[in-house]
Structures are given as structure tokens and as C-alpha cells.
Length: 137
Image 1 (cartoon, rainbow, N blue to C red):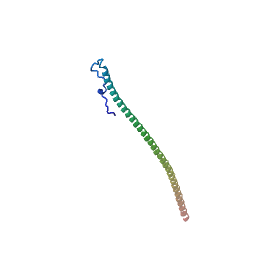
Image 2 (image 1 turned 135 degrees about the horizontal axis):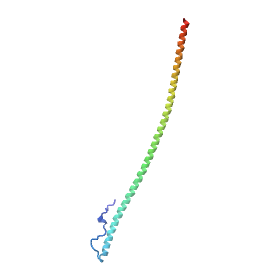
Image 3 (image 1 turned 90 degrees about the vertical axis):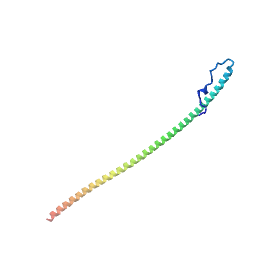
Image 4 (image 1 turned 60 degrees about the vertical axis):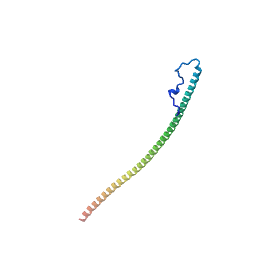
């Protein structure tokens, strides 16, 4: 920012404390013109400094906005990747659960068949024992 700080005293270009006579008009106009030029220089310097600051802030804002957009895009990509990985994991888990269910069903059926076969064998043995007992009598 400019070192030229604007104050009311610095910006005062006309001093109306004394009356101006017709003979003093040229001198007073010259004095007024010089003070006005100094005030204009100070104002221009401050305005130029403000323009530089605004340009700097606009550039910073643009950079920050671009950075935020890049970060948001990366986050969306990361979330999509994680979601895809989870979907694949869920598909794998589903396939494993189906295979496990099929295996459990097979084991149950085998167990049921074995139990039925054991029952038939026991029945056959019982019948055979009864037959052999009645044959031995």
C-alpha cells in the first residue's frame, strides 16, 4: 500500500480563511493548483495501490477456486474408487455365501441321506436278527 496516507489536512486544497483581493487572485489560483495537483497525485497513488491489491486478491481467489475444484474432483474420484471396491467385495462375498449355502445344503442332504441309510441298515439288521432268532427256534 502507498506510504501516502490521505488525511483531511492533506486533501485540503483551498484555504478560505482570508479574503482574496483581485490582485491576489493569480497567486491564490497558483497555490490552489499546486495543492490540487499534490492531492491528485496522492489520490492516484492510493487508487493504483488499491487496484494492485484487488488484482492480487482476484488472482488469489482464482487460484484457491481452482485448487478447491481439483480437490473436489480428487475426492469424487476417491469416493468412486472406494465405492467400486466395496461393490466388488460385496459381489465376492455374495458368491462365497452362495457357495457356502450350496455346501451346507449338500452336507445337510448327505447327512439326511446317511441318517436314512443308517436307519434302513438298522431296520435291516433288526429284521435280520428277528428272522435269525425265529429261524433258530
